[in-house]
Image (tube, rainbow, N blue to C red; front, side, top):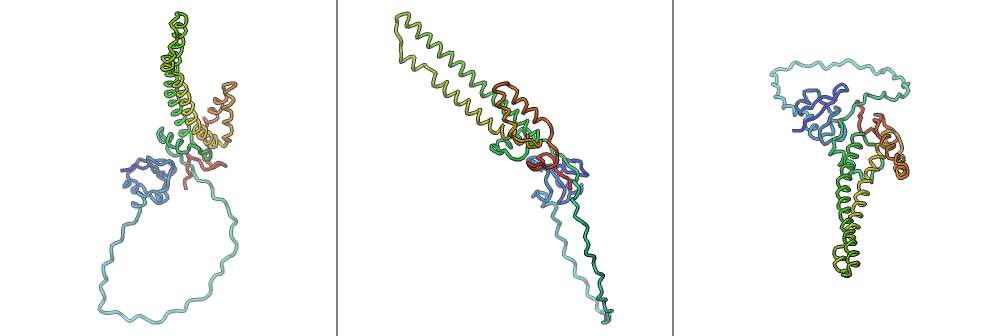
Length: 270
């Protein structure tokens, strides 16, 4: 059975079962959260809670006993006055409702963050909270370290093998034995080296694109432009461009909406 968290008086409480939620005053406008959700949601939008909130059908009323004797009802009714008090036409000027308290939703876990960023592969719009961005950055760093480290080791070994084959051919020339061209071509790892280098480049590009989109959304959460990621190019020359971008992504975004959309972390309590 699913366990839910409940917002009570601006504080997060739980986890509760559905029965415990009802005992704690659950209503259709209550904000709830459970595993698998990405944001706090009203109870009226959760199918399992909608069924629990539905009122039980009232029992059919028992037929009333009919009296044997009914007294005669008087037919006279006093006339109702037709005059009505005129309603004032003046209305108070419109005032924007005050912003309520903001409640932080639970932190996004590692697996959910990775799934979300790959799902938003080419999504450079909207906002991303810190847990979404930094968990995904950690995942991509691990993938790059494992995959590129393994492939680089294999390429280095093949390069050493190629140099050994070339050295053996040179030794054959000086010894007067001649060069066995067919044997050299069959052992030449050049094709494999090229394939592995291309594979490393493809993996790098496949990971770099969602890194850029996640970085753009993280900067948007701070009210900054995603174009600041052009600083990555500065790393080619001075090595600090990417460090500057990562530092810019450290602060927490404001709970209020900005020009890039609603906050992915905070919800406003009604």
